[in-house]
Image 1 (cartoon, helix red, strand yellow):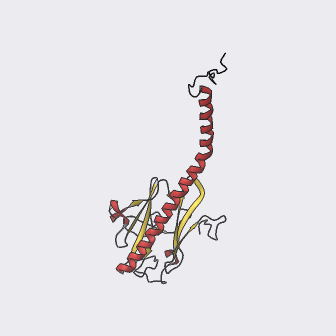
Image 2 (cartoon, rainbow, N blue to C red):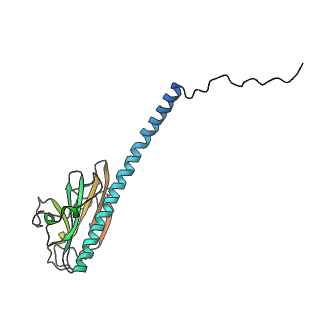
Length: 207
């Protein structure tokens, strides 16, 4: 009698794929991981939007200042809130914001907002470019030498301290994620900052 025998199959089970129970367990695990990761991912995205918008706001002021020195005339960066977006434009101060062509207004990241309580740039009437408390446009104006000024004909250092100031932006889902662009000197030095843990002497958090 031969001692060689054909090996039996190691398994008679059918390879039919995942069972319903295994699929349910897998879906449950995916749901748990998604619930954990989603808030962190959204926070990352919203922080990125704020940072991108801050960089573009800073860039707009730098360009306005550079253009003013180049052309030897006053330029400004104008900002306005339009529903869920901030729009900005860079233009000569002889032109009111309302006269700037629509295609020259550029939108910042979606849902970014101007924080009016923490913003100290002058608000102006969109049609006249004159300072008005109920204006709809915030502006940073620079004279022919690149200094921030209250009026376009003001000389460096011989202007209101209100020529300085800051633009603070925020996102509704980041309650403490404010960031700001600050014109900190009457010679036009510009810097950026973020929300601090305590307010300054004026009650503002971004300084």
